[in-house]
Length: 203
Image (tube, rainbow, N blue to C red):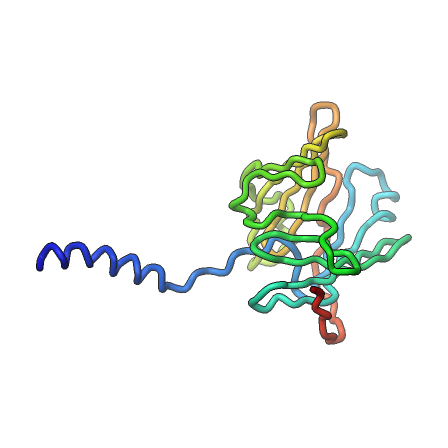
């Protein structure tokens, strides 16, 4: 009897731990409706840097539990405007075409536990965790610690991108002459009120 009790105790402990609520996995991309992010390339001189500023706004979002979870991003600059549909699933982020098919996998399923992968001839690997130096422009509730991901294309320079939870890319660097040069950086964050609109679910 005592032996049976000794065997059941660790089993009961494991079951109780399995029943505990788990924290939601972080989303490494913008998804809150109205969230507006502005990016600049610090390697360019002024006034070109400001003229080429890119604004990314979350136009619509369907991030309720269940798959797929779709987010429409509106990208605007002085010279262009376009909308992108992305799908968040199992930690991965996929760019969808107008027909709902995957055009590119920005982050793989299982990210950030997936440490290395390949997409369209480019090899990716998670370099490590880091606190973003520009986190002063984020609210106190934002997590300033993210993950650097390095991309090695078959041709061209290596590139590193820092992803933060709920924001996605906040800084990208390109290898130039043996040094890492920042070529894209988040310079502003805020919210823009948007009219409520249902999000069309794509297959």
